[in-house]
Image (cartoon, rainbow, N blue to C red; front, side, top):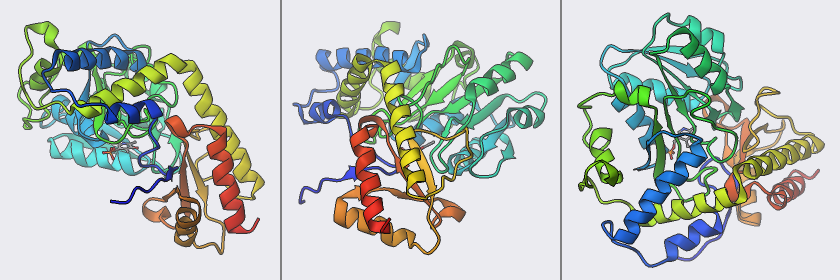
Amino acid sequence: MAIVERVLLGPGPSNPYPEATAAVAAPLLGHLDPEFLRVLDETCVRLRRVWDTENTRTLPLSGTGSIGMEAAFANFVRPGDVVVVGVNGLFGERMVDVATRYGGEVIRVDHDWGTPVDVERMLDAHPEPSLVAAVHAETSTGVLSDVRELSLAVHRRDERALVLADCVTSLAGIEVHVDAWDVDVAYSGTQKCLGVAPGLAPFTVSPRAWDRRVQRPPTWYLDLNLIGAYVDGSSGGRTYHHTAPTGMIASLHAALGRILEEGLDEVWARHQAAGRMLHEGLADLGLSLFAAEGHRLPELTTVRVPDGVDSAKTRAALLADYGIEIGAGVGAFASSVWRIGLMGHNARADRVELILGALRRILGK
Ligand SMILES: *Cc1c(COP(=O)(O)O)cnc(C)c1O
């Protein structure tokens, strides 16, 4: 296969951090090699720092972000449980589907796409839900929802309710504080702000949620009771569950090392600065943003395709002439919105200049 190099500014994989790429190219270790087990343990420790949690059950699941979503509902929803889901985009929709498949009595709280999840409406949906779920950073719309406010409000009312947050596009891009926000179950994905290739789903579980886990979920591969013994040797010896994706874990380990060395505060500030620069630059080009003001993500910007401009042709020209990938819109906004990602390694001024310059040329501004 010919080697093609792209600048990945879409909602999908972002360009990995160089440290993550180098780790994949290093000689592979066996999944039971003591050196690999050390890397795995250290990866879990690093993940706790990035999630800002003391949860001992913090680990990378083998699979993409959606595996995290599936594991969350499979392990914490029993048939008949009332599950309130905030829906303000594609990933909220997906949560409804997954929760329903695991037998949840799902109450969906719909919001206009482009707006954040409303805490009061989530609380009003049901007086005593077993689980309340929302997407922190909606990648389909570029909207940030206040998971902190939601989680604290849910637990003020009912300490036993579980709060589940999708942090696929937020972790290591914008602030996430699992313990301070009292979030019970959260998952992410490696290919967004963590700056690794797609393939792992960092996952964390609070002690409250662990006490209430499903003892024998209807999935074998994602049964956290079984996976725990493969990841965590401290509780009486490791047992084989499935072969750890060793190359991917080494890559995540390296990216987490890079992120922690840079410092989480600096990483967040870098995403904020890049996002602000892009938002201002797009305004200077006369373009308008889709996500509601005050709730815009720095790491994923949704912009309205100007009248008279062909969305697909513009994206094709960006790819063919500049090697830049950006995303189309989702659902009803497929051809009226573009999605521009500045995640992880791409949250930099030079990337912003690149996409703004290319758009200026193509749009003839
Ligand atoms: C990308 C994404 C997912 C799904 O992750 P995959 O890696 O595509 O399986 C889930 N939720 C959100 C918010 C995402 O952005």
